[in-house]
Each structure stands twice: as C-alpha cells, then as structure tokens.
Image (tube, rainbow, N blue to C red; front, top):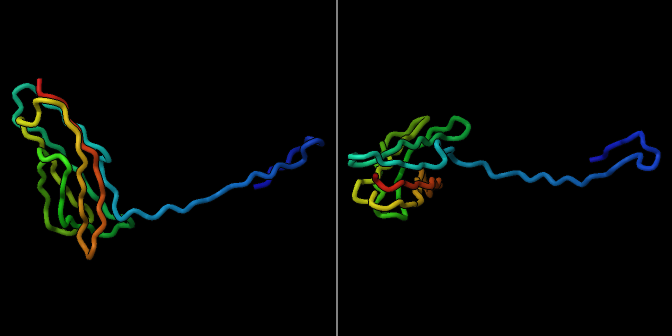
Length: 124
C-alpha cells in the first residue's frame, strides 16, 4: 500500500500488507460458548446450541461428545438449515464448578466437527 503526503521530506510511504484468506468454516455455532448457572433447588441446568451451515447449506448432527463425563446431550437426526443440540449438566455434577469442551460432529462423509466450550457454576 502506498500513502502519498504533501510533506516534501516524506512524499510517500510504502506499507507492506499481507492478506491471509481464512478457510471457510463448515458451520457457525450460536452461542460460541455456554456457561450454565444452577439455581437453588434446580435438578439440572441446560442450554440449547444452534448449528447453522455456512452459505445456507443444510446441516445435520452425526454425533456429539464431551471431554467431561457429566455433560449429556440430545439432538435431532434431521438435516436442515439449523441443527440444535441441548447440553445438560445434572445436579450431581454441580457440587463444584466445572468446564469441558463439546465437539459436535456434522453429518456427511468425514463430517467436520465444531467445538463449544461449556462451563457451569456450583449449585448454591
């Protein structure tokens, strides 16, 4: 990039610019991070995560896994513009705060995966 000035000592500046193209993600996850808070007397806490295909492409969920054994999930096998996954943490896991990463595997041959960090507070 070249910048021109009216300063006689510095009539032009040449600034090197590097443009890097990012690989297009297969899907967008909303929210990109989940934090659950337990209320007094609550038996479980859950949140809904939506997965949308980029460029309006339909998406489906082939599987879900988490590196924390207490997090459970439910999802529909349907393929459409939006796929939803419900993340649930039972009260037994809420004795202390916790964190984990949920990986949502998208349908298709060697379907890509999207990751969602999940955390929760201790039950009061």
